[in-house]
Image (tube, rainbow, N blue to C red; front, side):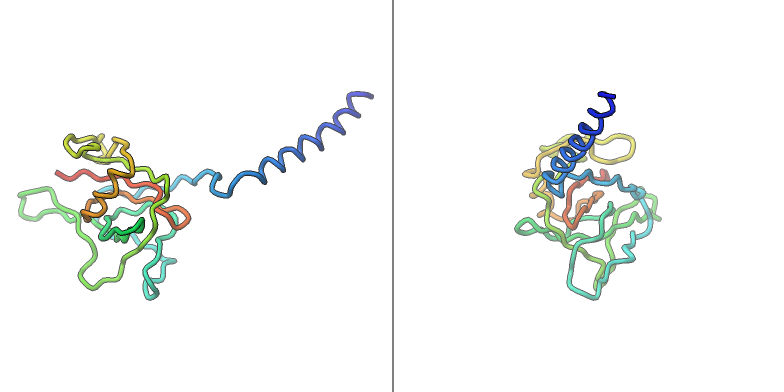
Length: 174
């Protein structure tokens, strides 16, 4: 009899404590969903069917884009999708290219203050740091990422979450 009574008192108290604790968490503390990676060397541009390119330049919807930064200033990056083009001359395997001149497939997002950057050439840019998938595996600070973004046109997988760039993983191309 005492056990039943104490459970009736304890369970509501535990539930109320859990609700108060959950309410105290900031909204950004929720875990970011796991997004599907695009093919690293995909031969077509990734689409964002919900994005309206006729309006001002704005963030891509949540997910991972194979792309490169075309312009960076004051914490905001402009970026566009890229695709792999196989070389028909046989001199190289191929190269990445962006949309044709005049095409409006561009996005702009601020960098998250805790953006994660994985370099394909190390933090100093001198050694190749990739695995079999040609994706950078050396984690570097945002202070390394920003000059590379300013240099522009470095192939990468760019992860956008809640309108901000939260992860950049360079793609190695010799």
